[in-house]
Length: 296
Image (cartoon, rainbow, N blue to C red; front, side):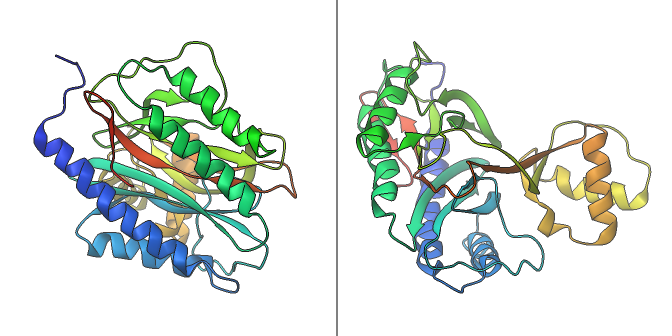
């Protein structure tokens, strides 16, 4: 018996989360048009996930052009989409503690081939998912598909295991060829997310940070900090947006709790200025002879 065996109710939760995530991603992507506020897409999508009876696994990410990941709207954000943008929409849905993580890229310019590169890489990866395959083999295939169209894979972004209230676990899925890697087993659950770029193929942290999560448990003294932390703890370490706690006290307390090791921050990750990055992502459950793609 595989150590990753999933009960039927767990599989059902993953599949329902995937169904909702697919629907919400398609609707969110359809809203991405020039002059539309990023904030409007983010907030309406997050509210829709809750209206579906599910929870938000992480803040809706909208990362534009060279920004590859970890960007979301700030409170009162006035940024709008522009003609020529390459827009990544990445969202997560939580059902009974189990996560669907999915993403797609919307091209508002002339980067259809770049979008195709990450999508083709994901489709190729999906065709390989079954017990016995190594993650390194999948990484090599992802790299080959992206390079076939003349782009670079983003080497320091990876897919990741998923679990109960756990967004980033093992195995990890490289977007480049690596030796070995984890052997896939029945019952494993994870997200694969190829990124293709016109830039360097390496992302670094930008000064902008909108997303945080809890990593430690320490007492806090200020009443406002206690109230904030109590709310954050309901997330069970899942990421949250600074936008959700936008009063002045919360801003200060979030920074203080980062300094004290209670929270960690996730800066926007970006390639070199002027580059464009595309992303495609699905969530998988490994079965006896293949996989279920919950978000397809």
